[in-house]
Image (cartoon, rainbow, N blue to C red):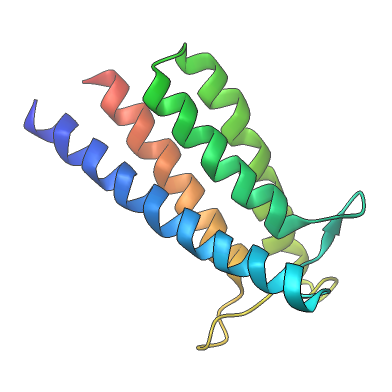
Length: 123
C-alpha cells in the first residue's frame, strides 16, 4: 500500500511539473509565435499541454484505465518523434536555459507517468 501511495504522489508531482512547464511554453508560443514545431498547423506545445490536462482528468475521474493508456500514447508518440528528429537535427525543439531540448523532458515525464500509473495499478 505504501508503494502505491508513493507512486501516486510521484504521478501528481509529474503532472504538476508537466502542466506548469507546458503552460509556460504554450503561453510563450501564444505571445511570441514559432517557438514550438507544428503538428498539422497546431503548435506541439498546445497539444502537449492539452494532453497533460486530459490525462490528469482521466486519472482523477477513475474512468477505465484503457482510456488513460490510449490517450497517453499520443504525447509519448509526439515526444518520441520530436526527440528522434531533434537528435537527427531535422527539427528544432524549444530548449531550456541549460540547452536541454524540451521534447526530451516531455518524453521523460510522460514515460514516467505511464510507468507510475502501470505500477500503481498492479499493486
